[in-house]
Amino acid sequence: MIRAIKSFFTKPANKIGLGVLVSIGFVAGAVSWHQFNKAMDKTSSEEFCVSCHSMQKPLEELKQTVHWSNKSGVTATCSSCHLPHDYTEKYARKVQASREVLAEMTGKYKDEGAFEKHRLEMAEREWARFAANGSKECKACHSYERMNFEKMSEAARKAMIPAAEKDQSCMDCHKGIAHHLPKVDENAVKSKFDQFVNKSPNQGKSYYTKGNAELFLDEGLSQAIGQLETAVPVAFVKAGSNADLVELTMWRKEKGFGRIWYHDFGKNITDAVLTKEFMANEPKFEVLETREDPITGLNWQKVKLQAWIGKAQLLDDVTPIWANAENQYKTQCSTCHRQPDVAHFDSNSWIGLFNGMIGFTNMDKQTGKEVLRYLQMHASDSEGAKH
Image (cartoon, rainbow, N blue to C red; front, side, top):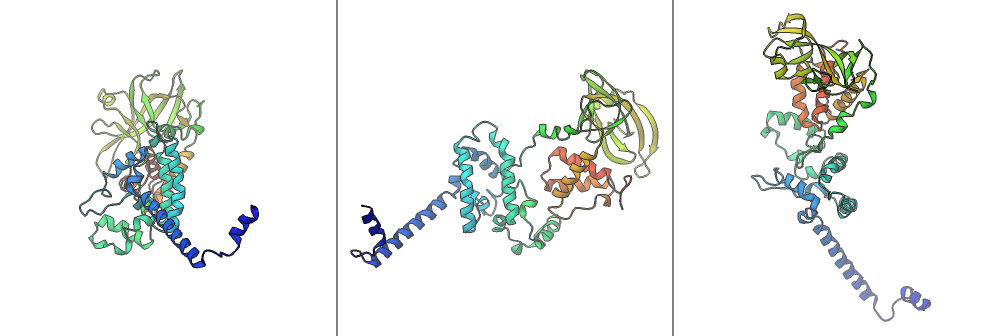
C-alpha cells in the first residue's frame, strides 16, 4: 500500500498526458487565486468592516466628517485608510487584523465602555503604522505633488509647504481627522506625580502643587473658594486632621473681581482662579504692594491669603513637572515644524502662540496647561532664561 502511494506521487504519468496535468494545475491555480482575491475584496469592503458591533461607534464618528460626505462626492471607506494599498503590505495587514477579529469574537469590546477603554491602544497602533509609512494611505488621495498651495489659506499654506518639502506624515498634525481622539483618564492625570508627593511637609517651607488643587476656607473642605494650578509655589502653614493650611503670595489685577491671581507682576501666568462668589463677598486678604503696569496702565496688587487644601497635594521639587512638560513640548510641538526655543518669547507672548499650536497636538487639557506654564516660567523674561 505504501509502495503504491509512493509510486503515485513519484512515477511519471502513463495514463494522463503531462499537458493535461499542467492544464488542470493552471486552472486550479487560477480558480484559487480568483477566489483568494474575491475573499480579500470582500473582507476589505466597508460592509464587512462595520459588520462587527464594536465598529458602529467609529462608523457614526466617520459620518460626521468630510471623509464620509462632501460637496464633491469623493469619499474614503474604511480600507482606504486602514488597509495598505500595496499587495505585500496589504496581506501582512490582513494577517495582523486577525487579532482584531479575535478580540471581537472573544467579547473584548462587548461591555459598555469597553471600546472607549481600548480606544487609545487602538489609536496608537494606527498612529505608529502611519508614522512608519509616512501616511501612505492618506497620500493616495492627498498628494503633495498635486496640491495647489496658492489656493490655500495663508495659515494652511504656512503649514503645508514645509510639510511637503520634507514629505511629512499627514498623521503628525491630523490625528482625530476621521474619528474621535481617545479620552483622557482623569485618574491617571491626577496621579501622574503622586510618587513625588511629600506627605509630611514642614511648617514655613515652600512647596509646589502636584496638580490642580481645590482651595477651601475651612479645614472640613466644605467652603470652596477656588483652585490652584499645577506647579504653583505655596508656603506650608500647618497640618490639620483633614487638610493642610497653606499661604499664597501672588499678584492680582485691580480690575473687576480680580479673581485671577498671577505668579508675578505684569505676567499673565495663572497661579490661582478664585470663585466669583468668594471675591464678591470682599474677602480678607492682605495687600502687600500696589504697582501700575506701564504697558496697560492697570494697577496690580501683591496679595497674601491663607487657605486649606486636601492632603498629599505638595511636592518638594517642581523638576518632575517641568521634565514631563518639556518632553511633551519637544515631542508633540515638533511634528508640524521645529518648535521655537522656550526662551525665544516672553511669558505673555507664549499664551497666544501656544493656544495656536495645541489644536495640532494630542495633548489633553491638563497636560496643555502644564506645558503652557512650563513655557511661561522658562520664557525670555523669566529668571535665568538663556537668550
